Amino acid sequence: PILFNYKKEFTSSFGIRGFVGPNIRYGIMAETHVESTVTNTTIKTDLYKKPSAADHAPLTRTDLGLTIGVGVHFNAFQIQTGFNFGLLDRNPGKNVTLNMHQYFVGVGFVF
Image (cartoon, rainbow, N blue to C red):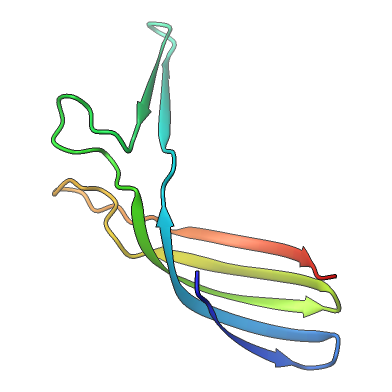
């Protein structure tokens, strides 16, 4: 992602920051595994490949999103949290809209 940052320093060892910006995501792998205890079978499905009897794959690989978040730093320690809003419909079908959203938390040490 390309993030625009704003940082406010309260002391030389403490500050907060906010960030916002676009992101592009590309799916590499999306598999489901369905196990049946009645028939003792497992069905594996790749959600990016079109099944033989279907018009389209269950899920598209690309997504365009918007990332927003906040963070704090104490000396060399950093904590941040944010949210990625998926903006594109990931379901190629016409009857269902599927947007992928993601919440994240990060902890770091700068050296």
